Image (tube, rainbow, N blue to C red; front, side, top):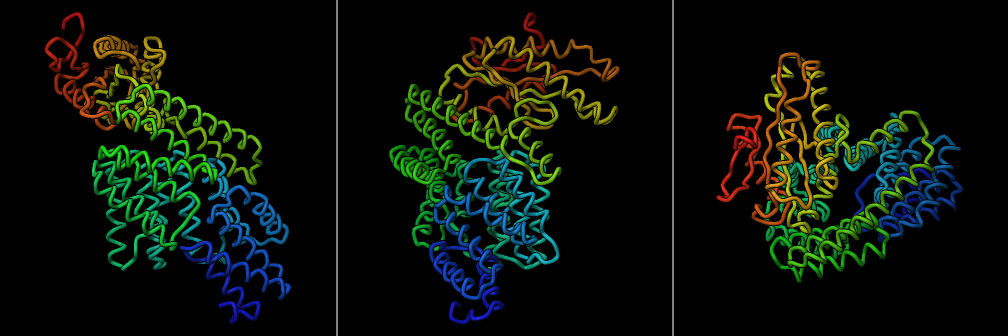
Length: 530
């Protein structure tokens, strides 16, 4: 390729082959691009030099040099802006988005992803159109706005099919499946992963290492731990062939492997995998991955029955998470957005990251980050799933606007009353009309009494101003951590959900828990009458 690239046109075509394809081995491609840069300098073509340097920066990041990328990217962007090169600006923003994701700054990642799409015009290649839209969907999902990311993923999937970019389509489906998995939408994740595997088989495409990692994570979420370990061992073996790479990928793969091994009960193997992941995170400054390594370490301690160590590691995780968030906020304060639209979008998604936009309560992402460690460390933890009774009737007979007002007011009552009774607890909206209440260091019996008082407060509220003659009540399913078959979030929430089902079928406006001498489920309309 080098020998044949004797003219500016030939060198431009050779560079496009690097820019518009998935790079498996960054080091081999880096050597090639370095020669391209030298040839561009010989030709005296500043645009080709700038393109080659930007490709070299991207490949250096892929090879692990994340820290040194910032200055080079700033220089590339300044040149592209000065010379009015929109496509080079778009590519630079796309790489910046990738770098900020590695740093754990999802707000800046979103900002750059938005810019990379806004700059696309009729000169953009089909590959750029698909990849940049995919990266915007990724950034939206990373920022906690999965509802906004889903239509972006769907549009990008349709665009990739329309353009016949089959290998790139596997990346789109992989990232979509992983985003659903991270949001706890395991059924949706499994469905997207199924389409991914069927597509790869139909087009004879080898699944990349990061795709195997996605499949392994989804297998873990469905309790298929042995299958997940096999998937991840195959993934890591494929990584070591040198055909695939990426600064953060091996650390991610080892973390996923550790989770699978913990699920199998193979805690020694899990610890070895986790230690290797931690070393890579420290070496390559992968702060966001390292935070999740701390979280998994707390889980692993808990799995071995090391409750004190689990609690201590949870504190390490929490402190690391807060440091990362603080760095993100500092970086955000220094950011000057290029357009008002970018500024507004980034600000909105920062606020949405761990808060429900309608009610202001914590959201599912926050629950997934915080609850597992609480389950592992607190033997007296109690949770409750709260569901509004006949909520569909309010939406249908009144309006969705009235329904939203009801949700907001119920959320205020739940949060206010819960914090008054249990200051260390929190309320979250799981979705729709379903909420979660978490009561640390509170046994089921005491929690049931507190929660039933909250149920009565909701029922007694002056709803006439909002709903007229329609009442607003809630049903509550309560479960203590000791009731779950294992110390996991899905198991505990499933136990609470079963009790919610009992409360619903006992007539609604009730609370159901398993406290009492018999240990059997009991429902309460009012505690005084029970």
